[in-house]
Length: 121
Image (cartoon, rainbow, N blue to C red; front, side):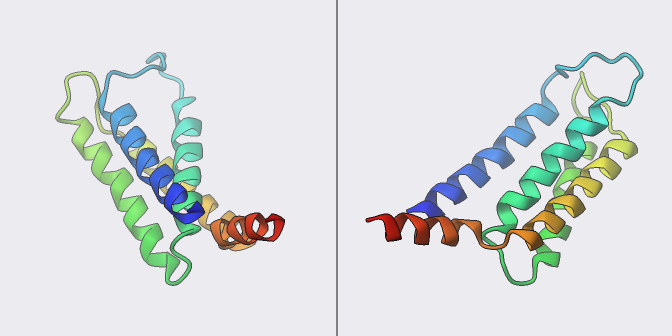
């Protein structure tokens, strides 16, 4: 059950990332690079989340998540309110690497939560 909920959360994360990246920006376009922190953190969470389900060959997952971020940056060029930004893609990739690192420190969290839940019953 926990793994199903974890997958659902992961797919919702992907959908949210896509929607937030292709709709008009919520952060002001003040010329600062504060949005890079949002990109970095968002992709770190996304990678960490999915890396809990993909425990073998995570490097393939990392490549896929980084490519997803790059594809979104390219798709932003097709929207009227967004423009692709190479620094955003770099922040996305940095977040992927951070998420991968933390997933190595805390591997297979859904299985651990399921075991903990089962031991309480």
